[in-house]
Length: 223
Image 1 (cartoon, rainbow, N blue to C red):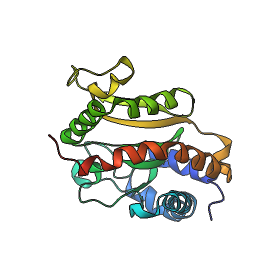
Image 2: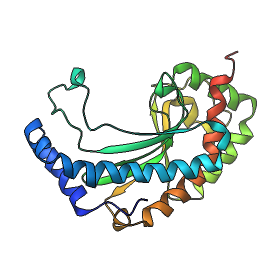
Image 3: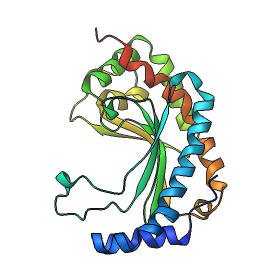
Image 4: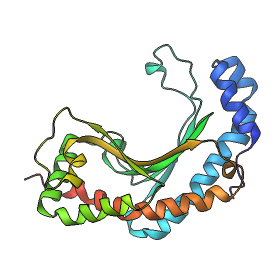
């Protein structure tokens, strides 16, 4: 059961930022496993149980990231990441093809939410076609998003809209090449107790109707 991250968790993240080399990591590996990886795994397990309990037919899985960077993509960086995350998603050969719930912790901040990392252009085209056929459903979701302050819609956009949006409220979806609903803030006290568990459950419960909407896009034909 997750009981909270610790000061040692934060100290390790800062340590790896300034000592990103094998010798330092190996000397502090036990701290990493006990104070960073294990709590992240426990928190991810609880969030998986919650989300999968709400959507038992989705066949969801939970993944916890590795601290080791891909040696082929270091690009002058050290071999270790200074942050960890977990995700709850449907299994897929291409992990970017499905919407995903996530939580991530870094030395100065934490973030969580739901969205795509790199959806296929065809997926976003299917989304626009679905909105064209039924703009009311997405308008209702967008209006609901505006009634709360926990999450914001963040998009990576094309230079020009792909087509004409049915209304001004829906214009972001006709520019977006990828998107997420996310919350980000500086490290807060709730991370060091079980308070973060209830915070995440409440947030993920809010995002579930959005997840339901996007999850079925891959099965649609692009007409």
